[in-house]
Image (cartoon, rainbow, N blue to C red; front, side, top):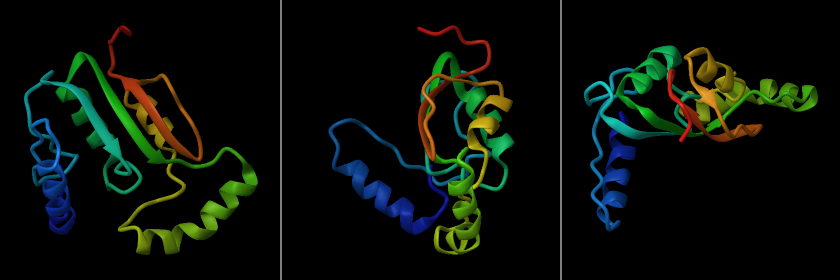
Length: 139
């Protein structure tokens, strides 16, 4: 899903170049298409640092994921190192303007765990990981 028309067109062109079927849809993370428990995997790449309602989006991810599903994510996160965090906080206002609303200092990992997910592979200052939905037992 991509709400921004120019980026959606780029994603559609990229989808045409791969050998597996990929459908790019207009829309927002706060209102995912698909039924309850219909997705094996949801991928969020540099999304949770930008969207307005992170809890609603993560609730939608949990809704569409199968109980054995995965949220795979690559996101900016607030650094746990005080010096680096100060730099992030200093750059954040400019970064938000240049990065279409991206926040460098969001506590994305905490938002994911607050939504009931269990993070298996965290990293910082960007996070690449896999999170299981509430009630999921690992494979």
